[in-house]
Length: 102
Image 1 (cartoon, rainbow, N blue to C red):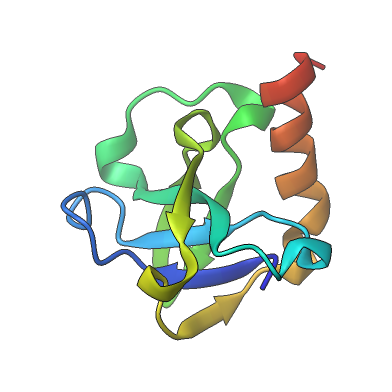
Image 2: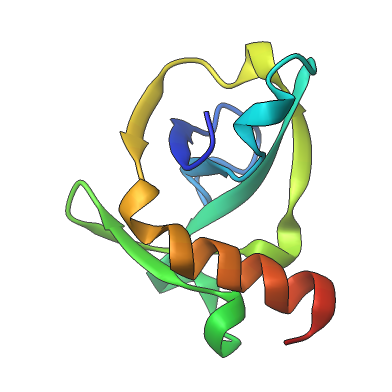
């Protein structure tokens, strides 16, 4: 589900404990979802403004590593833990910066 946050079960989970689903719900029939890793702020390094919005989940500050966007098989996402629909504008703006530089 778009703007859903899922636990990262991959090798990078220490660095990026969560994945943010950015794919439009219109494409729910696909077997994959496009995700952005949410990286622990303390491990992220230098942010690039609107490309890397920050969020607080469960008391932890996380940075959307939009430049690390990837596709993942839907079955690997597991259960949705959080929803960031209220942060839609920041997420869409980060995607715009990534794709168009604006």
